Amino acid sequence: MRHFDVRHSLKAVIVTAIAVALVADAVPALQTPAQSETESAVYELNLVYVFEAPEPEFVFVVGNSGFKTVASLQTFIASLPAGTTLKWSPGCERLGGEPLLSSESEMAKFKSFCLDHQINFVLVPSG
Image (cartoon, rainbow, N blue to C red; front, side, top):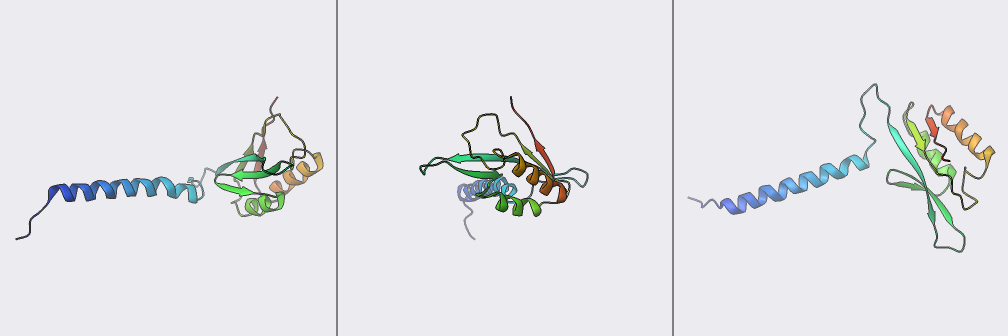
């Protein structure tokens, strides 16, 4: 008859539970936000400033994904389901040269792109 070690079994159960909890916590970050059939996904757009070069660089960030150009951001947006909301609250402080924010015509083209792809773009102005 084989000896049953309760401590070893309990340790295995605890380690397995922790692993499952960590994976369950990480998986939603890799997927599109969960939604019901009547509820559209909402994404937050951020603009990150990178100060490693003599001139600041800008990176658009949505979730855990970064985009160095408006074109690459638009490629991502085009892959989103119709009805998705993209919300951007860029604040009111500027360094100058920020993509989209430094040009009214660029912003108008971006809004039109979102509209063409049935993306609800919400720009929240700050004052």
